[in-house]
Image (cartoon, rainbow, N blue to C red; front, side, top):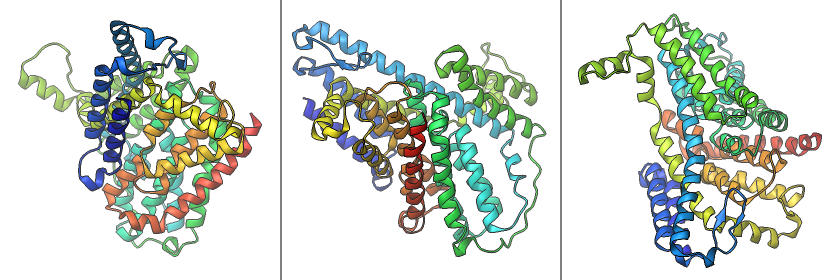
Length: 463
C-alpha cells in the first residue's frame, strides 16, 4: 500500500511539473494527489508498520500493536495536526494577498513608477532590480514580479528589450524573497514552522541574497541590450486615487509589522497578519467612503456592497488557485511524512553518506545536498521540496541547515523560468520562451546563485 501511495505522489508531482505541457492547472493534481494519498492511508491503515509523530519527530512506539480503532484515531489526530499547520500558512497568505489587493485597489503601486526618472537602460535595470529585491521581501516575490512587470510594460515599449528586464526582475525578486520571512512561500513555511527566526534569517541571508541579485545585474550591465537609452519618453501619470501613496505605505508597513508582532507576542504569524489586515481594511473603507454592513441584506444590495467595498473587491481578486495548490501539496507531503517515508529517506541518506552527520549540517557533503536542493527547485516546485525537508530533518531553530535550505530553494528556482512562481507569472505576462530564458538568463541566475552560496558559507561562520 505504501508503494501505491508513493506512486500516486510521483504521478501527481509529474503532473504539477508538466503543468504547461498537459494544460492542466497544477492545483488539480495537487488536490487529487492529496485526497487519494490520505484515502489509501485510511483504507490500508492496518498494513502500515510505522507511524511518524511530527511533534516528537520520531516514529510512534508500538504502532503495529495498536488496534484498528486506535490507529484510525491516531490517523485522524495526525490529519488534524497537519491541517492546522497548513492552515496557519494559508490564512497568513490570504491576509497578505488581501492587503496587496487593497493597495492595488487604490492604485498604490503607481507611486513606485514615480521613482523612475531616467531613460538610461543600465540605470533603469538597477532601479528595477533594487525595487524587486526590496519589494519581494515585503509583499513576496510573486506579487513584486507582477507589480514591476506591469510598470515595466508602461516604460519599455520594445518587447525584445523588455523581456531582458523581466528576466533580471525574476532573479532579483527571488533573491529578495529568500532573506525575509514574508518574502517567499518556502521561507514563510520555515518561519511559521519555527525553523528560522526573523533576526537570524536576516543575519544569515541578507548579504548572500544581495550578492545573488547584484552579481547577475552587474554582469547584465555590460551586455549590449542594456547599453544606451530608451527611445520612449518617461511620462508621469497621475494615480487614480489621491490616497494611492498613503495606502501603499500603510499596506507595506502593516505587512512589515507582522514579524515584529510575532517577536513581541510570540503568537503565530497569521494572528499578526489578521490584525494588519483589519487596520488596512479600516482605512480602506474610510477612504473609499463606501457604506458597509455585515447585517443580512437582499442579494442585490449585497452585490452593490461587494462592488463598492474595497475589502470585498480585494477578497474577490486574491489568488485562490494558489491557496488550494498549497493546501493540496502540503497535505500530500504530510501523508508521506506520517507514514515515516520521508524520515526513512533521511536515515538512508545519512547512512549512505556518513560525513553528513546526525543533523545534516557542518560538512561539505551537507552543503552539496542543500545546493542540489536548490538546483532541484529550478526543475520542480520548491514548495514540496521544502515541505519534504521539514519532515526529513530535525535540526533545531535557527540551525544553519534551515537557512541554507531557505536560500537554495528560494533563489535556485531562478535558473529556469518554470522554477519559481515569479518566473511562471513573468512567462505568462510577457510570453517569454522557455529556451530563450535558458540561453540568455539562466547563466546569469546560476552565477548569482553560486556567488550567494559562497557568501553564505562565509557568513554562517559569524553566528
